[in-house]
Image 1 (cartoon, one colour):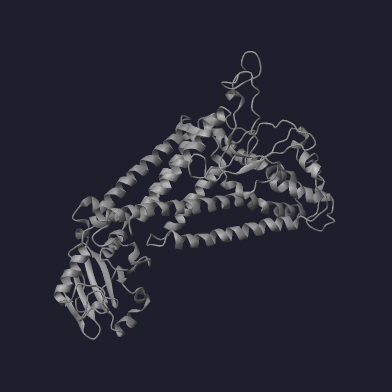
Image 2: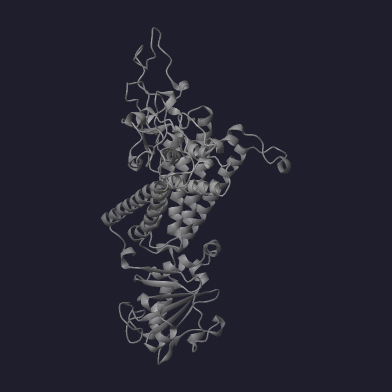
Length: 592
């Protein structure tokens, strides 16, 4: 309960300005703009930006990706084959006397605002074929003057070798200059899209159209992309059965990507919020030792009771606190290291194909933002029901696009998913959470509308087990305004049961729903404190990790202040100070 209440305080304070809706920007705007108006403007901006960017994505995709891409590079290589009188197959090892663009060749590309051209240089023979002109800015007889923007080879190791090594080992250099007008097919809109989104995607699709595995390097940005034949579409297209199987595999890959990234990130967010704040305790101890006696340890105990109460119990019993603090710090280090290592595993399992540099981390960042939002702000019934579905659709939509094409405008598609996700978050706060908080659907006593109920008792200041993240939501709280009025003639009964006793109130903790359907992908359970000496009716409350008790005395965490803490030495030799007396709940008192 206390863990959920701590999160609810953040939620409640950030929604105060929206609920009051007092004008802001008094001097600059004449006091006419209200916070809710600014949020609505932000919603419109995010949605409009996403729609415009999506339209740009459609234009660029239809002009440069897949079968829609013009065969400019293939045309130049075909002309070069005719000039050299070599076969069109690309499975040989040398460009001279054998197939063109073999495993011992390096293709160098650059883009030109004028015409396309080609040239081939073979060590010991010089330039064997060229149709360059002076207007293209290169000398056909001086291959060293050629400034390549992209380098491609079917043998990736060749791209890591210096030029001197290549020339001394009989590696042919195939220089091709592609006309931008050919790539854009003379379309001004495509020209603008290529300038806006850069030329990496058009060039990559020109190389992928050759049907060979290999590696390409952008010499300006030093980015490189390698691929195998497994990501290339089969020649002649897929049959109906093969196409259906491919689409099913795309769906399964997208769902697997969502499952692993969302669940592991949810556990990481839970750990960072619950254990990451442990560093505040040694910091407070050190500041008090340095003479800042005004610092009250009760601030930490009340702010983070799932950590503060155990610390106070240890100090009250004159036991060392350092092992508990070190254990939490080690937990943070170990689990965060595992999270970083899991990103490497995900890269091998789910993102083993060419993609823009940094895209993978941006996907993880999107999930991290969503999980933090769900942990703190996803509390109303409507928000829990709708927002995870939208987040899931946006995540899967991007991954459908990512897995469906060998290389496309993945970074642009991810930006569209970002904008749509941010729009859904802002929309959820203004249209779901603010009204829910105003009508007391969520409150300090019932911080989350849906939760997971666990039937066994627990300590109300304890965190719920981490495995409760994976339980479904199975209960809902209702405030007094949602209760059915008592039927005439006696007790409050539900529909169809006049006079029946009301059902026992729910008493489990609600979980922050991660994107994954209306039930939430990562609910956290909470357990109920029950006075073991005598059975009592459970009180109505809800929170993640919350427990309740009928005994009002058990709701107090501290019954003494810690004003004289700095004056008492710590016989345990840890951090010093006298712990405040703590009155624990009935369950803990009974256990002792």
